[in-house]
Length: 107
Image 1: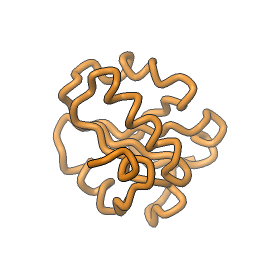
Image 2 (image 1 turned 180 degrees about the vertical axis):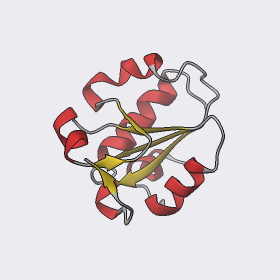
Image 3 (image 1 turned 45 degrees about the vertical axis):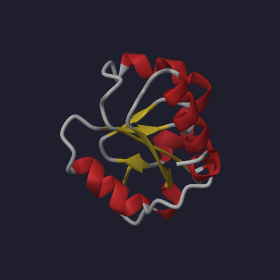
Image 4 (image 1 turned 120 degrees about the vertical axis):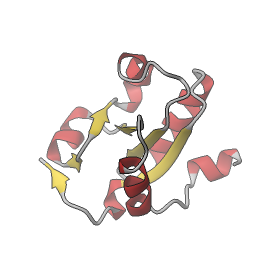
């Protein structure tokens, strides 16, 4: 997967959330701001805003764990995915934007 694929992801967020739910030990990370997260997020996600991505280590200690990352449109999650990989995380996937999610959001 190239840099542009990471930034401009073509993953179906709905299928990816289902994959997350069926993957033992996986994490779902929302990199939107705190207020965006509180306004509505995918159940089971952890909020780690893009400007605080280094705090991922507080939530995901295993760099081999599957990590699914989303934001509003897919752009910030693309940036965060690259940053997580630079931090040593091996199994990180940008799943796009919650704006394409068809499931119910937690408020």
